[in-house]
Image (spheres, rainbow over the protein chains, first blue to last red):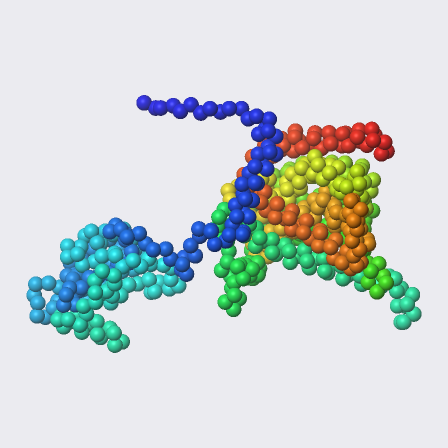
Length: 186
Length: 372
């Protein structure tokens, strides 16, 4: 059933039809805004983004830059199962797996790249992860960059421990630490 | 050689003075037009509760966006100067000049002050006091149509041609109204020279109201401003170009040729502002200010130096020009665009009869008051 809304199209009165008075009223509105903003530029709501930033809303649903979580011993939680790479609709995750020599149960990612220039910030990788190893809670909003390579997040970018988890690097897992150390020395 | 200079002294002095006036006035207009390109964006931003452009910086100083006209100019210069393969090369090149030159030439007849005494010589603050300056204004603003139409025609592009046709139809129509609104002033002041008109506006009505055009011809002022905005091709009459959706006559233009069209538009804003203040708001007149200083209607008087008087008068037209330029920007960012049939019926069915009526009423009033 289509509901019909009756619009009361009243005929314009004389003042409205000659247009001049209505123009004057419109100009009064716009020039009032002009002068208010001219003398109080501080009150303009524009946020000049890269210099000024508003606090992000504290919501669990907020999706910001990705990070890879680490275990208490410092090794990445990621087991290189390729679930996130499969789930990613933008094909921006690239994983290469490797095996621990002393651990036949799980793998670790030798390469874990996220191409932010392709990422659509959908959060599918976080949903797909069976190990709760990737999350998007860093509070950093990826901005623009001059080169494509500046938007490529590598594994050690992602392993940077940010808000929520204190840095526990330097603990037991020798390989992960060695990897991080070797990258740090380069 | 010396005798030759001595014999033609007056001629040489006149030429030198005219040259200086042309350079100073034209330089001021060009600079102000450049600033207007920034003002347009800043005014619109402030009206819409935004900040506007403020990023262009020289050595880290942004001066709240003052360098943007400079950045725009540099960008325009380095853009590719593209000419369509099938365009009429000569006309395509001539069109931006036809748009810009008549508008700049119009400033020759607009007085920007009374006179100053320089080393004992009287220097009129007007480039050329043409006896029929008002017709010169109409003639040259009619020439601006060629810029629009040549641009559309020479591009060999159907959409540009359609835009040019809209432009020609609009400008020819509003040209008529623009001319007729000035007839009332011509009748009252009895002179076609803009300087004479401004001098006549220095008189007082009933000994206390300045006899400005707005007091004598308030109705003509509204018609004049409407027709002038339409001549200027700006919103609400900007469907000549309609940059956001329908495409205008300069769509094939790029680089400095395009900049010439845009610049002509901004120079026209100043022109309309100066004409409105010259014809209807006393030009360089300051109320109650005469050659010797202020003489107030209550009997008070204030003696002023000649140079101070001249400076006040030039300052007066500058202030009026800035106000009207601002007003035109506000109008442009307040009103929505007309449809083309509305535009045409507003001109031929609305403004034209009203302009004729204005002439009739002015004539009748002058007859009754015994001014003829």
